[in-house]
Length: 312
Image (cartoon, rainbow, N blue to C red):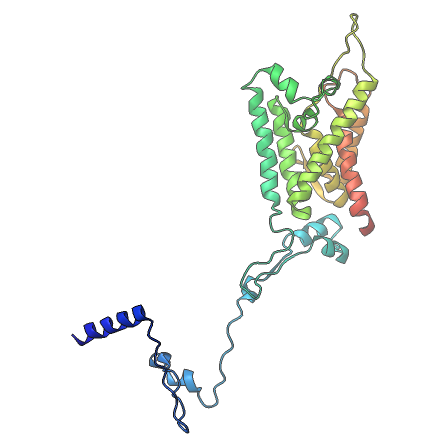
């Protein structure tokens, strides 16, 4: 009954906008502090502190979350430089991730999304998708849009410069390129990151296509009825060659298993590749784009020359 009357009085007061009565403190009387309800569950030692016992500082969890990602790089550099890991390489390949700020957020550096495995598997997936398309769609359609030639550029199909570097219709060609992309591209991705791995792949593929097209244009022959003899270039070989060349230049003393069981020095393997491609330039009946291979290798060499040459 009393509670009901009190609620009714409060309701009437709100309607009539009756001002609240604020108690005026008496002179000489100290106002009481508001009741601290935490005293009900806080222990005496927490409130007052024990004699001779120092209060613990809050735990710093940033030490647990902070790490230096300098995992396999020293081992790779040592393998390629005769067991000597230079401090200059450490400055280039060191990646630090500092986590936690004053608001508890995450502050990564610019390589937060630079995942080389995502880029590597994405490139392999694109190659696999185009390889499957060769067996699903008509050859004329694929040859028109996924193979590069001087005819494609004359007919304003410049996208073939990019699509051709993901295009393989023969399984052996596809398998060899994907094995090379995985093993050599994985090392490049660990050292440089995913963004530079993608850039190196695209630059190597574009350079290989440009060199091959320039050679085809200069050596183009005509049939008896006056039409130009077209040659089509396609495949990821030029892009992979840029990674192979960069790896060999960075780690010339490392051992590579040729055909998976013949151990050869990386420098010797690079020399064999160059000799094969240079000799293939003079073979007009060869179905291999040796000029494209050399164009991709030139990209790897230029990248090494501009970024890493000063460390040797």
